[in-house]
Length: 285
Image (cartoon, rainbow, N blue to C red; front, side, top):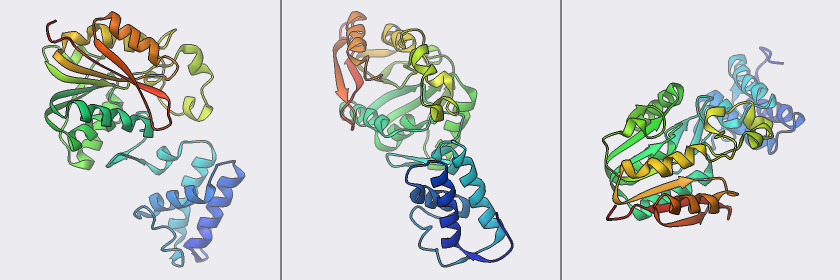
């Protein structure tokens, strides 16, 4: 309970950590420090530097409010309000999936193969992929597409936050790209089956948007459409780069070949799981 009696930041960090530990949160001390930095407007790693300072009741209350939300199961990135992704610091909330480390590898693969020209990120969510490409690549244009107005609003906020220019467009998959000619089409589409969604970890299912997770009975509805329709927007010789479910990566590669994509290859993420499929459009088609 927060009182008006002055206490040190260290004391409140311990109180917050104890609350998180009691709720079964792993690494409760580290998470308490992260929440303190969010509550007190500190840079990463600074919570314990200021541990001897005396806190006001208001500052302590902000920390304990965040700790209470985390103890109820809300994901850390949503409670803290931000997430790191490659070189970016992004606003993170329930409007889009939390940016995850494995998706960073998709950006790296794209930059290695085609770091210039025109690139579109479909199912952009928080904008993490599009913004990383805008920041690290040498593209003439970067486009970010999403069917969720809320997600696209978050992506715009993240573009402004990081001072990066992306053309944001609202619409279903490739529909907003009619008339475009892309050098690279990149996407992290929803890829879970309906059954897989139902048994997801509760901290994901209860908090992150279902629209960004589930894709039909076989988990491949969005992926299949991207592969089938991709040649209408990707230039001859251009690239398609997809993040996929690790159990269906080989299936996606076969689908890509069936739709005429050249040399579809499966690549692994930083955890050694089959996570990405990359392929090229024929030069002559």
